[in-house]
Image 1 (cartoon, rainbow, N blue to C red):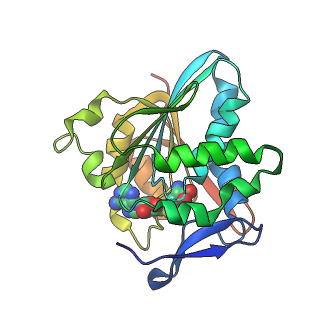
Image 2: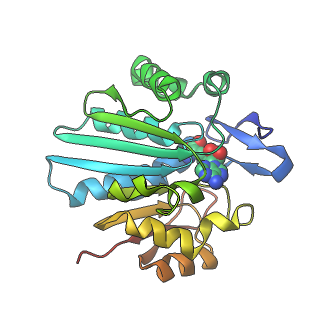
Length: 239
Ligand SMILES: C[S@@+](CC[C@H](N)C(=O)[O-])C[C@H]1O[C@@H](n2cnc3c(N)ncnc32)[C@H](O)[C@@H]1O
């Protein structure tokens, strides 16, 4: 179990912080603003513009954590017609239901707080290891595992059945978990990414860019949210 506590970021949204590592689950300039900008703006919305309106898309999130990226994605999907989402997430240190309640993310959605509360509850109480429909057109599979094991087809041959359109790569920082940001891990992620699929992440460090390129992705730097100059979007070219 890792020791963490709840903190409030600059935009009023709460997140978790690991005091021992001086690391938070989101930017302290704004957890909600960061998630919206990077994963929804540069990832989900960008992909929606490229795809035909009737579509089924498959998302992988590395690190479900507080569930904020999943909640934002589900709320967006609710407002879209004809989109079906399969959301898979791999998480090594699940957040407890008590922590999820204390984070109180539904209060961030003034206009649809009840809907957000229902979805947040589904996200955090749905069973691990079982694909569950948390709302119409949105299935969630939470895998409690280490990314390094999950993504390795020698250890987990099941991973080969996936072909993701979109990857939210939201592990702890490369300084803290260098093993997760390696070319080897990105190569394995590349293998389960559809041609034309994209990966978005908050770190734009040189080692991350190089590792993504080494794995085969075409990498671009995009404007970051408050407090972060750049973020990355990596694309697997169409064949
Ligand atoms: C920066 S936090 C982001 C969490 C989440 N996306 C959110 O919005 O709250 C990193 C997440 O990666 C998870 N994690 C750390 N190491 C992992 C590993 N080896 N495999 C899978 N998940 C891991 C952590 O437990 C944490 O939930």
